[in-house]
Amino acid sequence: MGRALRISGFDYLGPYAYFLTICTFERFRWFADDVCAREVTAQLLRTSIDYRFEAIAYCFMPDHLHALVAGLAVDSDFRRFTAMFKQRSAFDHLRRRSGRLWQEGYFERTLREDEDIVATAAYIVGNPLRAGLCDAFGDYPHLASSRYTIEQLREAIQTKPSL
Image (cartoon, rainbow, N blue to C red):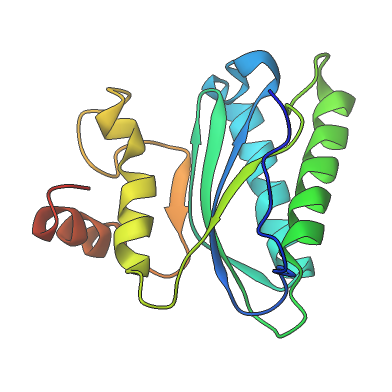
């Protein structure tokens, strides 16, 4: 798999929201291990604070991460944030266990101003239910939202069943 193309002429700076997907190396199921998932979650939250991003919603599936993040300042740099998160989490991962954490690159989609943020967050936290990893919406240990409660996200799913 090669690197995903970035938007030509877009600098990825500022208060934009991004739907981010990062896969583990060779799709190894690192996040099926609760401890590993918690360690990488801590790096995601730490890096979000350090680089002025909000982790609006995230879900660590067994072999990949889905996250909805948004810049909080005019100079919030999505590419630097993502690179630092991957670097920090990979370094921490290698200190604790053997094996590469992330594949090269990542996929992102910049949300347009008119897109429904809560629907995107609900889609992300609904992934484990759709994948059969849990029996109820929000009943999965490696997901959260900084902006919405699970009840608000459940309601978004119920009002937009296509999610």
